[in-house]
Length: 99
Image 1 (spheres, helix red, strand yellow):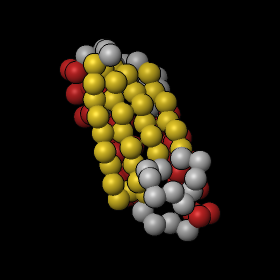
Image 2: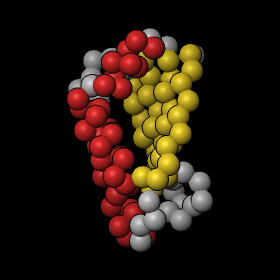
Image 3: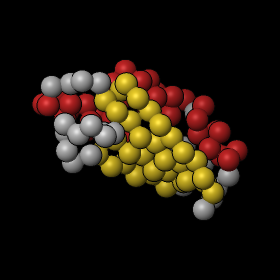
Image 4: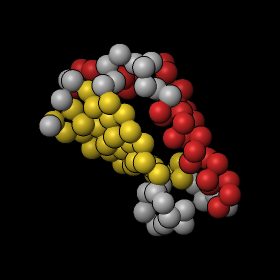
């Protein structure tokens, strides 16, 4: 199995707007469940501290193989979410590992 972990840092939003954007991203990511066959598990965590210097969103997803992760990366449903996230974020870091 492959564990795909991604962290996102949002642009500098005012607190109320940031909360709306965070929940929009969370909902969009969670909406991928059931839409991409290769996606075996997905969870999204939001940093409880809105003004943290750390990252704002954590995505954890599981795939059976690296090939399945590669299919997910270019899947049209995933790319729609990527566009949304790209508009709202300034940083992204990721790590993929076998478990």
